[in-house]
Image (tube, rainbow, N blue to C red; front, side, top):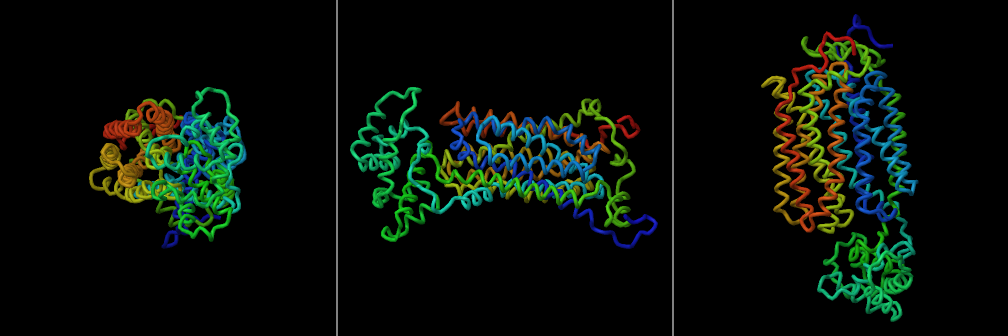
Length: 572
C-alpha cells in the first residue's frame, strides 16, 4: 500500500529516478530496433535482391506508420495509463523486429516495419505523459533529456553493436567459394574483370581473368562483349572460374592490400605467412578481397549474419516488456514504494499557473491541437529537424560505404560517432533549457535552445560540401547530432508545459509531424543521390541544411506559456 500524506517522513523516496531510468531504457531499445536495419542495409538488399528504391521504401514505411500512430497512441497512453500501454508497445515492436529475421518476402518485411512504426509511435508520447506525472516541474527538461538520451545511446550503439553481433553469428567454417546466388550481376562483373584502366580493382580483375581456366576466361570475354539485355545469364562458368582462382594462395601477391577497403579479417589473414594458412583460410581471404574489389557484383560473405541479429534484438525486447509491466505505476500515489514525501515533492513543485497533468482524460483534444499557432510552429520545426537529422541514422552507413568504401567494423565506429557526440548535447540540453527558464523566462527558455541549435546544424551540413575524406565529414555530422540533441530537451519540456493532462496527445502531435519529415526525407534523399551523380551526396547535404534553416526559423515562434487546452475546459 502507498504511504499516506499524513504520515510524511522527512526524506523523499527515489522511485521517480527508477521511473525515469526505465523510460530511458525503453528509449534505448526503441532506437536500437529502429535503426539496426539501416546498418544491415547492404546485406538485406543482397539477400533479398532488392533495389535502392525498394530499400528506401522499407526504411520509409516505418516512419509513415510511426507518424500516423503518434496522436492515437499518445491518447491511448493518456487514457489507459503508461503501465499497460508502454509495456504493450515494447512487446509489439520487439516481436515485429524479431520476425524480420525470419521472413524473406519484401512485402512481408514492409508490413513488419509498418507494424513496428505503429508500436513505437506511442513510446515517446506515453513516456512524456509519464514524466509530467512523476517528475518535479523544475526538472522536466533534465528528465526529458535523460529519456531522449537513452534513445541516442541506442542509436549510437546500433551501428557498432549490430556490426559486431552480425560478425559473431558468422561461422568460422562457412564455405567461402561462390554459390549459385553469390554473383549479383554476372554481366557487370565480366565487364569489370576485363577493364583496361589502371584502377586497383581493374588490375586485380585482369589478374583474375588471366588466372582462370581458359574455358572460363573465354566465357567471361564473350559475356562482357555481349549486350546487357534483360535475359538472365547462367553464371556457372563464371563462378567455376572464380572459385578456381579463390583457392590459389598466390592471388594476394598481385595486389597491394592498402588499395582496397578490406575487412579486418582479410587484413589479418593477409599478414599471416602463406604456408601457415589452411585451404579454408586462403579461400576466405580471397573471397573477402573479391568482395572489396567488386562490392556491387559479389554477395557479401558476412550477409548471412543479419537475420540472427534481428532475432536477438526481438527477444531482448520481449524480456524488457515484462520488466516494465512489473516495475511501473501510472501515478506516484499508486506505487507501493513511493512515500508521502516524494509525492509531496512532485505535486508541490508545480507553479500555480502551470497546467496540471491530473484528471481523467476523455476524448482527443483535436480542435485545440488544430488551433494552436505555437504547436503548429513546433510541429514545423520538428518536421524539418527530422528531415535533416534522419540522414545520420539511415544513409550515413551507405554514404561511407559507397563514397569512401569503409569496411563494416570501421563503418560501424564512424556511424556511431555522430550519435555518440550527440549524447553530450542530449545530457546538457535539459539542464540548458531549465537554466534558461530561470534566467529569461519560460517563453525564451524553451525557444532559444530549439532555434539556435538548428542554425548550427545547418552550418555543419554546409561544411560537408568542402570535406572530402570520411573522418572530417563524420566530425561535421557529429556537430549536427550535437546541435539537434542539445535542443531536444526543450522540445519535450515544451510539450509538458503546454499539454496539461493531454501531454501524450500533444507530444504525439509534434512527433507525428517530425516523423512525416523523416518519412519524406528518406526516399527523396535516395532519389537526389541517384539523380545528381557525381554530386548526389552534396545535393543531399544542401537539402538537409535547408531543412534546418526552416526548423530554426519556425522554432523562434514557439510559446511555452500558452496552454493547448484552456485550464477551465473539462470537456476533453
